[in-house]
Structure formats: C-alpha cells, structure tokens
Amino acid sequence: MPMIVTKENLNPYEIVKKQIETAAAKLGLEPHIIEILKRPMRVLSVSFPVKMDDGSIRVFEGYRAQHNDALGPTKGGIRFHPDVTLDEVKALSMWMSFKCAVVGLPYGGGKGGVICDPQTLSRGELERVSRGFIEAISQIIGPDKDIPAPDVYTNSQIMGWMMDTYSRINQSFSPGVITGKPLIIGGSKGRNEATARGCVITIQEAMKKLGRPLKDATVAIQGFGNAGRTAAKLLAELGCKIVAVSDSKGAIYDPNGLDIAKVEHLKDHHALLDYGAEYQIDPSALLELKVDILIPAALENAITSKNADQVQAKIIAEAANGPISPDADRTLTEKGIIVIPDILANAGGVTVSYFEWVQNLMNYYWSEEEVNKKLANIMVQSFHAVYEAAEEHETDLRTAAYIISLKRITEAMKARGWV
Ligand SMILES: NC(=O)C1=CN([C@@H]2O[C@H](COP(=O)(O)OP(=O)(O)OC[C@H]3O[C@@H](n4cnc5c(N)ncnc54)[C@H](O)[C@@H]3O)[C@@H](O)[C@H]2O)C=CC1
Ligand SMILES: O=C(O)CCC(=O)C(=O)O
Image (cartoon, rainbow, N blue to C red):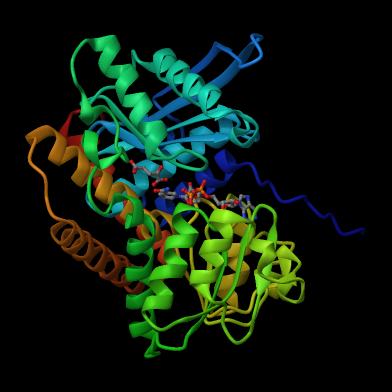
C-alpha cells in the first residue's frame, strides 16, 4: 500500500482551532462551548479609498475580528502587511482572547489587519490609510467595546493618527480607544518595550526551571522589530550572547556574539546585512542553530514539519504569534525542547496596553518603574501558573496555557448566562 502523505495545513485559523480542541479535550469541555470558542463573534470586512500622493485613488481592504468578549471588551493589534488574510486576522483575534485570559486581563480578543505594504507608502499615504481604516471600523471599536494597538508594521505614530481620527468622529478626546500611543497623548511608559520585556521574563523563569544561568546563554532571534530588537537588547544587557538576528531582508550570525549596539545602529541608518558579508547566513539556518534560546519574533509558521526536526535550541520563546505549527510543536516536544507559547511569551505587550488603558480611564499616569514592576508580577505569576498546570495535566506549556484560558473564558460565559 502506498503511504499517504497529507500536506500540513498552515492556515492559522485551522491551527488555532486544533489548539483549542487539544486543550478542550484535556478539560472535557462541553461541545457547545468548543463550538462557540472556535469562531469569532464578529468580523468586519472593509474597503476604503485613499488618495495617493500622485493624485490617484487606491482602494485598500482590511478586517477587524472580535473573537469573544465574555471577559471584557475585545483587545488586540492592527497589522499592516501585504499578506494579511481574513483567516489570519480571525486566528490572531482568537490568540488574543487566550492571551488576555492566561495572564488574567479583563479583556476578550480582537485583531485587525490591512492588506498593504507600508514600505512602499509615503508618510502621508500611511497616515491616510491609518485614518481610513479606523473610520471604516469606527462603529465597532471604542474604549469599552474593542481597543486596538500596534502589531506588525504599525507603530505609536500610527496609533496616534488612529486615536485622533476616532476622537474627531466622536467629537471627544478618547485616548482609551487605542493603546501603544505616543506618550504625549496618553501612551504608557514601558509599552514599547513591554512585549520583549515580558518575553524575557518568561525566558528567565524557564531557565531557572532548567537550572541554567542566563549569563553567556546563546540566543538567536528571528525578526528585528518591536519584539525581536528589544528582546536582543534586554537579553544582551542580562549577559546573554546574541549570536544571530534576522529581518525580512536576511540574517547575520557570529558564534562569538553580535555587537547589538552596532546592529541597532545599522538597522536605523543602513541595513542589518551591512554588518559584514562574512556574517551573513541563510535566514532559515538561523532557526536551526545550536543555541540555548531561540526567539521567533516575526510572523506565523516559521517552524513547521519541514524544519522542526533540525531545531537545536533548548528553549523557544514565541515572541511572534503562531510561529510554530502543531506538527512542529509535537516534534519539538518529542525532542525535549521547551516551548514558551505565544499566548504567554508575548503577553507583556497587551499587559502594558491594559495598563495604558487603565491610566487613560483614570487620567493619572504611572512611572516606568511602576509599570515594569506590575508587568513583572503578572508575567512571573502567569509563567508559574502555566508551568504548574502543565505538570498537573501532564502536558506541554501551550496546552497548559490554553487550559487556564479556556477555563476562565468558560467561567465568564457561564457567569453571564450565555451557556
Ligand atoms: N508589537 C507588539 O506589541 C506585539 C507583537 N507581537 C508579535 O510579534 C511579532 C513581531 O511583531 P513586531 O515586532 O511588533 O513587528 P515589527 O513590525 O516591529 O517588526 C517585524 C520584524 O519582523 C521582520 N520580518 C518580517 N518578515 C520576516 C521574515 N520572513 N524573516 C525574518 N524577519 C522578518 C521585519 O523585518 C521586522 O524586523 C508578530 O508576530 C506580532 O504579532 C506579539 C505581541 C505584541
Ligand atoms: O497591545 C495590545 O493590545 C495587543 C498587542 C497584540 O496585538 C498582540 O499581543 O498580539
């Protein structure tokens, strides 16, 4: 009989449904609850015209998905990327629900995306796309409905334009509608670094569990944006040796450790690859380096059944959302690699977004020290809760994180009388 080889399904929406099923089976959740959780409660698909610099009109398309608001208003970033799809945005909104629940935030999950390549847009065009998208989704967002934030290829300036558009539409200053804003208009100290800071805290806790020192630990990082770049900086400050980093253009590797200040300077003023031709490696090889810590901090499906077997890291901390497919997850677990799942590892970003929203609502602002302390408390506590759940249920950290989240969301749905 010929062996039937089925192609791995890398659709993020199919992946998150599988992840829910795996944890739900461990918990013995009722089928109707699983059915509710397997789809977003609301999805808005929009198109809007934007006047380009040359006078032409271009129509952009985007989505906002709101998964489940049992625990509170939905929350999650907006991504600008040419490959954005509806299924990706749906999946990202679902991961947001589980992320907020695992760290105990009073939020459900949401996510938005606009199909565009910001690198090809002028600043003026980028501003008009940002304002156009918020206008198009303005009816379904709001400080107590759905609160966007930055994600891939969006930043604090874009959040500033978006908050301004929403405030103008509603004729009232509404900083609480969006987080990740510039400090001067209600941003929170510490938000820019929060995703990486939270991720680093989970790595520190995992290394303690392994009984290994962080000092001199070797690290490879895929993606050198908000999450990856800050993680490189923070880990280098803690004495780690950052041996490899990459961005969308390529990867660099030095087994003796990269000079992170130099890499940052190159990223800002030239290109990462200008570090030197002798340091350039194939970007896919970065994921297969023999390192202590691997941080995928770019996009989904970086590690799949195609390369999971070649991964040699001891710990993988998912700064990105969905960088490991379920098939790869199984292989990594079999190999004894500890995977700190996205919904825990990158939850620092939304946690400080929550702090930003709280500060906006009370119109009183905290010091960076206070923010970082509160963040550390939540991340350390959440890591240990997930670790203990993994031991109790004899499962991996991802399933354990889902177990905690599913329990909380289900309890909220029950308390509200939905089920
Ligand atoms: N910004 C935030 O607060 C949070 C971000 N995340 C997740 O972290 C990941 C990265 O997001 P950000 O750092 O915010 O985005 P960003 O836009 O600041 O940076 C993205 C980085 O990834 C690089 N990149 C893109 N495609 C790549 C590829 N194929 N290989 C290597 N590098 C590639 C880009 O060059 C850039 O350096 C995403 O999965 C995002 O959803 C998760 C939680 C919060
Ligand atoms: O800060 C937020 O509200 C959400 C950030 C985000 O999009 C994410 O955690 O994936």
